[in-house]
Image 1 (spheres, rainbow, N blue to C red):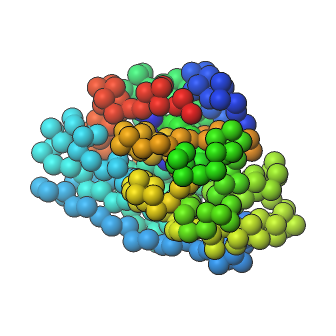
Image 2 (cartoon, one colour):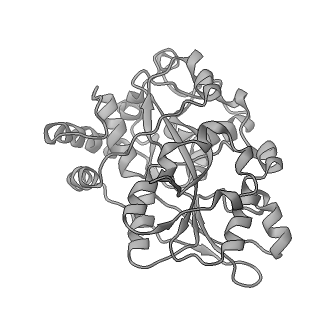
Length: 337
């Protein structure tokens, strides 16, 4: 399933190569910027982790397995077989950003099933928060797209700690009727730092993304391992951007509504938002920035304290069912940007 999730690696692509990358299944993921660098830079910028509350949506019947996921993934349409079997939705809570999720789990909070980006697998495992899956119990394992099924970052020491379920891109989503036409020819992340659009741009509320994109705009190649001098430059640009933004968004719906109304004209966004806005008949597009587009993989991880194994595997099976994938996935044509 192609849906949405946090970014990971920038890949420089031409328009013709975007589709080829998806078809070729060659999505290489690198670790994100270190937490040390993130905290060091953002503290100086004045941008801090929002620590948004993990709002739970209780099951309508008895207490069910707790699924910690993105807004938009917590809907019955994506969990048909699970709801049919148990008569209700699982208990859900929404990911604001994964740093907040990690911080809360480190205090003892323990959802059974989580849906992060793949780059979290190693650090969540190292934090002692995960247990591996038995892929023989995942009914749809053999139907998963090989390019994500074989993703190395989903494994630790040969054990499968993530069931990858979707992939996509993160880039600039923008109103083609409301920005300088030059940006349609010269695709660049720099539009999100353009002073002409002060108060009319938005950015994802995630430290990794704030730092990585600023580094890309500054022409840095080592965006996941910045030195102290580079961090100073990134801080300056991130500070400038903070003062230009209408808001930092944590839910793509929030960003989409603002773009649909014209409140904002450009934003850091995911494929899902492009598809949603196009369906509304809006003049929107998604850039392939000259500095590099971001690719990501996301999927299911299981908390070390989870014990309701049957429900956990049933939920994974329901979410990855071929009929759900066919009905709700983005089509290849949705990536023609």
